[in-house]
Image (cartoon, rainbow, N blue to C red):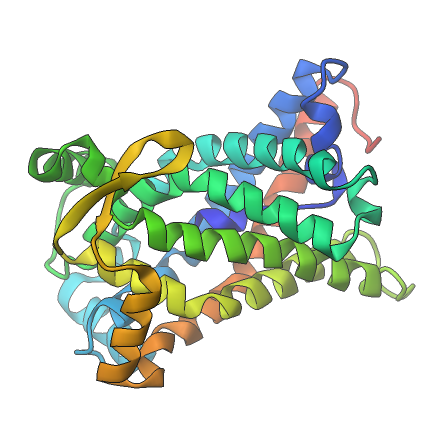
Length: 326
C-alpha cells in the first residue's frame, strides 16, 4: 500500500532535486511531505480491502477466487476483516514519504543533469530503483506486521493500532528486532523494480497524455499515475507472492547484510530459488496468485492518492498565501 504514495511530476517529485539542496525552503519540504502523507493515507484506506484479499490469496490456496475470499472474509470476520493490518502502513506513511522523497531527489542528479520531465527512461529507472531499495528500510517491517494481521482470519475486537503494536512486539519477542526485517530480500526485489518501472510508466503515459488537448489539468497526471501503478505492480507479481509467503510463514531465518549495512534476517533460500521451487511444485499460476486484486486496486489507489495530495497542498498553500503552483 505504501507504494501508492509515490507521485512523480508536479511539485512533489519535480522539485525533488531542489528540495534536498540548501536553497530549498523548509516550508516547501514540510508541505510536500504533509500533502504526500495525507494522500498516501487516503490511498491506503481505499486500497486496503483489495490488498487484504490479495495477501490472503497469495498466502493460502484455500480460496477458490477473489470473490470466494471476499465472501468468506465477510462471513467470518465482518467488514472489519478487510481492514486488518491497516495500522502499520498508515503509521509509516510519513517515514516512507521522507525516505522516498529524499532518496529520489539525491539519486536523479547522479544519473542525469536534466530535470525529471526531460530525463531519459534509463535515468528515471535507475533513480527510481535506487529510491525503491532505500524505502525497504520502512516497507519491510511495515508489510511484515500488516501481512501477519491480514493472514489472521479469526474475528478480532482489537483496534488497528493496538493490533499493530502487539503484533510487532510478538515478532520482536520471537526473533529479536532483526526479525522485523524478515523478507527484506524479497521486498527489495519487488520494490526496486516496481519503483523504477513506475517512474518509466508514469512519464511515458504523462508525455503521451499531455499531447491530448482535450484532457484538462490535472487529469493527464491522474491517469498517468493510475496507468503507471497498474504497469509497475503487474510486472512484479511473482516477487510480491514470494514476499507474502515469506512474511506470513515462520520459516528458518539466516542473518545477512541489509540496507545501510544493517544486519537483518531473511529466509535462507534465495528469492530466485524460491520462485523456481514454487514454479516446479505449483506451476506458473502460483506465481501470479492475487494478481487480479493487485492490479485492480492500483488505478483507484493512485487516483485517490494524487487527488488527496493536490487538495492537501492546495489547502496548505491557501493557508500561507501561496495558493498556486510554481
